[in-house]
Length: 269
Image (cartoon, rainbow, N blue to C red; front, side, top):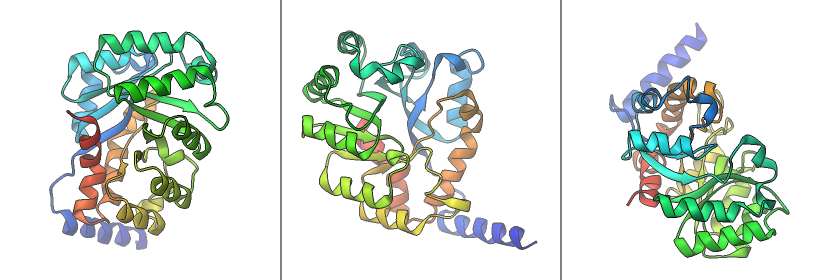
């Protein structure tokens, strides 16, 4: 009974804050990988996004053909990012693969990508010739790097070229709010997406430290789902609603920034 009362009052709070309007989302972390194509063909995958109130999505896939399939079906909704992986095995070796830069350069000539990634890169891995070439390429073309990295790798990337623009996947996944704050203060061209961070709103309520950080940097965060496996597509509407719940605890302008404005300003023409 007590839990039902808590749920009732929380829902009342959300409705009072935002009314019946559903906050639109720009999902800054979507994958459409080969293993989901049969279960979720493009029309079905796009319908899931639309039903969840996702108006735009940053999409990268393994292989890249998945991203292009979704983009061909709805170029307005899909923002193209180029992942450097041909298969899942590339996660462990791509930053040392001398064929990757040429592959990226060839793909970049064929389509209008807004960035490179999402890729995995950790402390001590950014010094390879492959990464140095990709950093130069990104800086020359004004591309954003979507990095699934620890804080050390983020700093290593910026040291290679301070003019980089980086979207930090999962806020570092295990990085503390204090670490995220330190990097946001140090690097003005760093943005943070919040997919797969269960500590932001444990039990459905916004963590006070994260709230403080969102209010301090209201233009630097964005939401994401990370559909890296098929079950994440099934759960996407629930993830979207859970995101809206904690967004509703923020001032309206800040909530709208994180929900869609920050990503729109960075990724849309």
